[in-house]
Image (cartoon, rainbow, N blue to C red; front, side, top):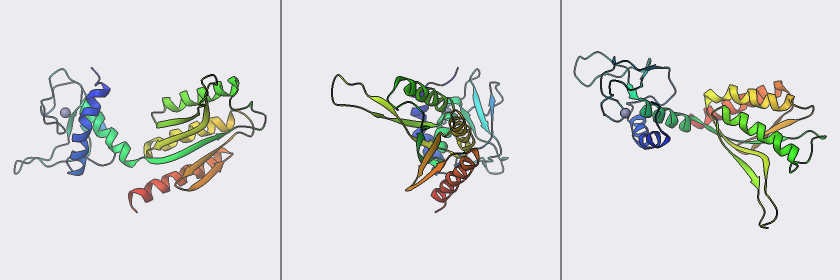
Length: 216
Ligand SMILES: [Zn+2]
């Protein structure tokens, strides 16, 4: 059974503490998803027993010395919820905040038109399917009669692993109609991309910004 959002959220403070203490890796690593009983019975994150019929994960290549003197080095093993919590912490810590604005083509319908809102909804759905964490801005009115509408603006949390996926989504937008483009705000710099090549440069800037945030 897959862990619930509540279980994952509850396991995150421990995961953060374990990352800080060096018991769990601070960057994304390869893992193995298992359902057999070949684990060492205790989860490194919460210290609880991993039950026989449970899904569990082993982090590969991240060798951790067992406290017992002379014991062979081991790779951390985690409950599914503890694994998801660890991963969520790693992604949050390594994500770069990016402001994204989709620029319509000159012949696109107005942003608050039903047609454009539908197009925007499709883009939002695609973005959701990538697993990137984001918020979309909306124009809301005080008047009880006027409906708000979505703006073509997003605040994204882009991790290293999500950069290529984001690129594919942006290129799809640019190509969906002639003269559509995107603007990205990185720190205080705005970068506009009109072509796939320019999206490539833009992704490079995100990657550089991500690196400088981590190693200033
Ligand atoms: Zn656990």
